[in-house]
Length: 252
Image 1 (cartoon, rainbow, N blue to C red):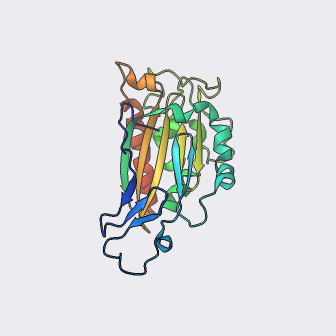
Image 2 (image 1 turned 90 degrees about the vertical axis):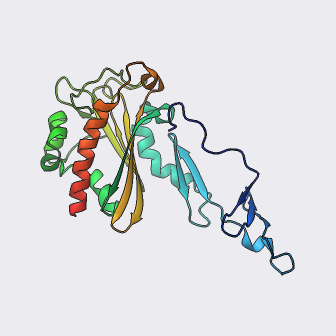
Image 3 (image 1 turned 60 degrees about the vertical axis):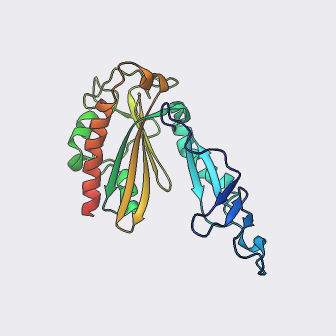
């Protein structure tokens, strides 16, 4: 999802030039020019760039760098089918980034994904979260994620108070307005959906024992544009829960 009011990062270009040796390629990946090779037997067709598989889903762009995997439509659709069905009403592609939290975590990315995929640890690690969602303190089993997990009485979103002055996202069911949903979209997108915002985590492996994480809080455009917009109620809560998770993952 785009930043509210942001300008495009890229301008129109007719070619790509490598800044190292100045080889120039067409946008289709064909080698156009290789300086100082005019008198040799270099065949440009032998040095084309590899096609890259690209898919868009819910405002997120997925890239597959494996040669030969550029036509990945059906397998990709299979991979996002569950999230597509369960999170359709949040219309994430229409949301905008209202706050970004960035972290550098000394843990393997698979440990972080596994941690997100279970709530067995929630009781001992996340006391504030369990007070907001009591079911998370019951061992993390038998949670009906497809239906959403209810908050405590009087709470309906992931903030310090469990409430906010922001309205629920349009299109949510009555249950989704008072419950929390989450999905792990493999390999590296974690989604936590509250009534008024979505927390989207992108994991970027840096080394076997280090991962960069960008947590984007996504809101409805009119909420971000409002004169009284203030995302810190959600941001402070997520930063607390996130740091609890990262610390326990680093201990692994």
